Image (cartoon, rainbow, N blue to C red; front, side, top):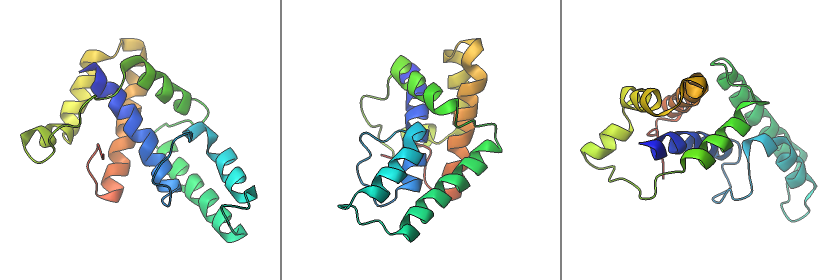
Length: 150
């Protein structure tokens, strides 16, 4: 169950990054806290070939997603580092679950996920972990994909 908590944090991080950088299949070395710097780097990199319009588009996507998450209480100065800490503390799922059957339904059940957070996470971190879950749920609803995408 602990790994599910880490997976929630990991999935939120990846969801944010893949929304801002949809053309990137691999996001190694990308962190939510580093998004502005990554946009700047890609804009300055002659290999990436980003136009000013593309850089502006990335920046706008970043701002839009941060605005949506901020409405739930997400703080880009706090929660990216908190997310990284949760992943490092709890780990992530070692094996992808079979998402075609009942097991897949469990991993998309927001109430089950809330129960996991309530039962696994210490009281002093529950509110922030619940916030991460709520942010992941919002993004999942917006893009029509499951909570956990692999």
